[in-house]
Length: 250
Image (cartoon, rainbow, N blue to C red; front, side):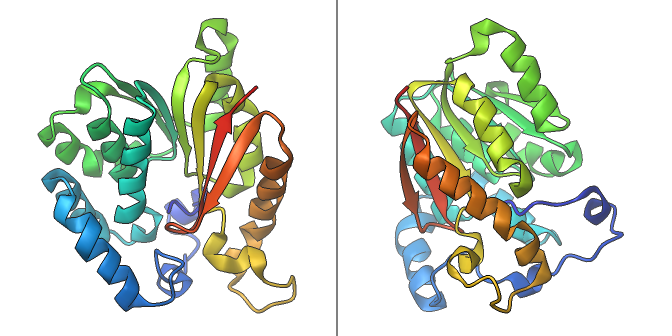
């Protein structure tokens, strides 16, 4: 769950109400969520993933991290489609990135884009400890210009098996218009936070945190666009904060 952080928020000039945003899961029962992760997720979690999760939980922006159950889903998807060449937009400390790298075969690659190398380096020791750092090509900077660079080379189009987007919500639609050209036909794109703490189903005048309201419209916009995009098949799941899977068909 990588909730969009502005430059001002990164620099500490604007407070972020993470403690008020809520659960990492849309499930309103802590007992049920704990049952799921303690029964089916944590017992199979790689030791380096657990170590990274523990370190990230102590970070003040920890709600940006992908939840363990969603990481497990990503790992399963990558293995099911036999992905070898993947792209991740939005990294934070790298929990989802490590899930991806561990799921990829020994010659698999993940191109990881994020505006902050500082957060990535918090998780890098665990990535190295897991022995998968060689699979990762981390590039720091704004994702849209980096995607434009990739698209300038025709050889990059249609070459990615899997793309995971967990970054600034106000650019989700812009990301989609670019990554749809980079993912191969039959490949998958996953968009995180597409239920946005459940606010997408609330009336416009419903009470909600300003932080949630500010990006709610962008999430609703991309959900509508994906539902009508004839180039993809979609499946929206209530895992984590909502994840929409898009299979390119044209």
